[in-house]
Every structure is written in C-alpha cells, then in structure tokens.
Image: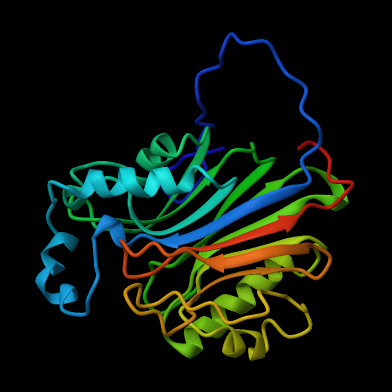
Length: 278
C-alpha cells in the first residue's frame, strides 16, 4: 500500500517479509471496518478543552504518543481503518507521522497517508488508511472547495467486476462545498457495484442521503442513528460508514472510546462471494 507525504502515491510500504512458511487461509468472507477522527491525538472530554488544550494543535505534548498507543491497541481488532485529523509529522506531533505510528501500534502491514494541508514544520494535516490486506489500487484525490485542504483516498481490494471500492474522506463544513465534494465522489463510485464510503462527513445521515449527489445510489447504513460527536456526550451523527446495497451489513456500532472529540464508528460487512484475491 503506498505511503506518501505528497498528493501522489509513492512506492509500497510494508512490513519486512518473514521466514515463516506460507499458510493457505480460507477465502475471507467479511471485513471489519473502523472510521475514527483522532483530532491529532488530543484528549478532549469537555467543551472547555477546546480552549484549555488548544495549544496542542500547535505544540507537542509529552503524553501524545501514549494516547496513540491506546488508540493503536483498539485498532488491532479491525481489518481496515480510516483516519481523519492525523498529523503527517510536524512540530505539534513531535515530528511523528501519526499514520505510520498507528500502523505500527495496530500491527497493520499496509498504510497510506494523504497530506491535505501542508503547513511545513507547524502542521501536516492528513487523512490516513491502515489495512491488513494489500490493495490492488490506491488513488489520492483532493476534494474541491474554496479553501484547499480536504481530500479523499480511494482504495480497491481485489480485481475485476467484484472488486471492493473504499473511499475514505473528510468533508467540509459548508453545505455548498459539501455538494461539490459529494458530486466529485459520485463520479468515482457510481459505476461500481461494491462500494464503501467512510469518514467524518460533518453531517447527519438523513441530510447526506437527501443530497442530489447521493440520490439513486441507494447507499445503506446502520438501521439506528449512531451518534459520534461530542465524544463525552454524543448527540450528533457526523461520522458514517455507508455501503452499496449489494454488500451485506452484518453489524454497526459506535465504540465507547472517548479520547478524541469524536467517537469511532465500526461496521462489519460481508464481502462479495466472487471477490478475487483476498
């Protein structure tokens, strides 16, 4: 899976090959997904922390890697993780690429960092993907908007007509910009039968699905509303995992894990029976 500190995929980054004998595993039938806005590892458990801990968006904190370790242990339960609000290695993160760090802490062999807003040594605003499965394709897509800095990552698992297409994204706040971004996303996915959209979408599900850009795709999510924000008293459903109707939804939940200001959202899906490669 590529790792990049720019807007373009770079050569693959993977764990070193082991000397253990190759074991033939049965075909994978399901995939455990997680989406998490980690707020660059800042612990936020009350509205006042946006003020009292705001300095951590600019300067390093000695316990930040301890927080990442805690997140990494949680991520070990999942096959593919979408990360938002991660730092790609700047002053505020102690020059630690948080996507790479979480890949190590979560024991993921494949990871990708999408750099969306480059403020040099001050901040490296990024999205990220961690995967236990090697993608057949990774594409980096800046999302349209008046202010640059939002992006989507396209990951394909498998080959051919039954391949699984996963889009990791972090949408803007404004309705007009979101409409433009969702139209862009639709162009990426509308010809594919097996699609997953996952990330911080900054909007309740009912508003998203009513947008013209998503109408007719028949995307589905959990039957119940899954509130993810604010993490200390969730009242708003801003983070979502949406799947195309040909995929089987086996379960979805919000995790009781309130380190960031968002809680992570998880989903298990059944994979297409004819999916090649996994």
